[in-house]
Amino acid sequence: MAMLTEHDVVNMRFKEPKAVADGYDQDEVDFFLDEVAETIAQLTKEKAELEAQLQVAQARVTELEVQLGNVQPAPAPAPDAAHQTTSFANVAANDTASSATGMLALAQRLHDEYIADGKSESQRMVAEAEAERTRIINEAEEVHNRTLTKLEEERSVMERKISDLREFERDYRGRLKSYLESLLNNVENSEQA
Image (cartoon, rainbow, N blue to C red; front, side, top):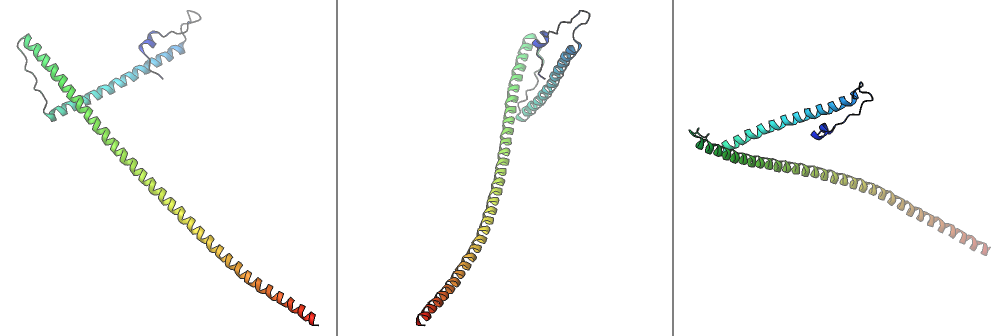
């Protein structure tokens, strides 16, 4: 549900009732009031979160100022209005300077955190990539070894078949030669007879 704006609330128009005695549609009014209540609750929550962040930031600024030795002593109360105006100006200048210093320190801390997070994320990604590379290489080597083993088995089967075929060829040639010699002897014997 989108947050309502000031313009939405001011310009909200409900359907005109059929009769003045009926009043506005109760469901429509309830729905709008629910939206208003939700928007107020959300804004209250955001305000509380921002106030908490502000307190943390102010505590951090004070801590950093103490570490840097930039804490200015509180100005002594001035006896007259001229000194009071000057001391207010000094306080305002000191507040501005300390606020700027605090913001710079906060920015530097955030920068350092982002750099550290980036480096750790980079290291994590490199480690994951290395693990994936190792897994892929191991998988490829396993497939390679299985393929070589299968090819070796097929090669030995083929060599056995070739050997069997050569032996069959020798036997067949020997039998064919014997058969042809016997036929030739029969022809010669029949010619002599």
